[in-house]
Image: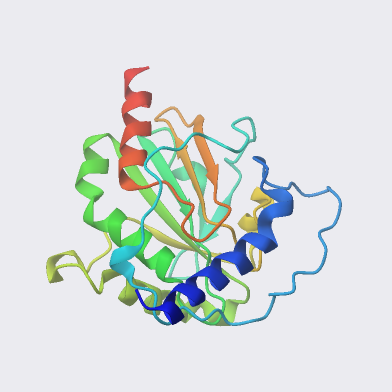
Length: 230
């Protein structure tokens, strides 16, 4: 890794963490709390040039760091056809892994694309644990909806051709309505992962404090194994 790449990665991490540190002590900010100071990075297009997807590593050992008592069953999203999709329609059948990506902010986040790529590649393992996956792509404005296709292309680039079709629902959070309901906005969204058991109960909630602060596939499988033992 050359020095210029190291500096770029460090600056990217500092910019993101610096913008999130004030409200990442373990609980996401909820609507009605004190207003956040202006985000100095808002409106800036992130520069991910030089980020090597193969070097991205997510966390294997994680514990829930957000409330498990909130009722998230009222969350709604939008599918590619522009139709409203309710989270509750997926609950009560099998476990559900809800992944909120950073979203589109003028460029495709390689961390989000890599996370989605690994979910696609390991989908059979997750299914074997009786789990469905929902990946949500937040958008600041409806006009950005077409960027979902660009995101998918980025996510499947490193996968075999047979895995280029995403096997689980990819949904949009237009105008960040779900992000705000979850209290995880930060120049779009903080990366967040929620796991509901087959009865619809929230059993795991993790809100990242940096671009790479996300549960790995191993961490998800471990969480599902624990749920299946109870």
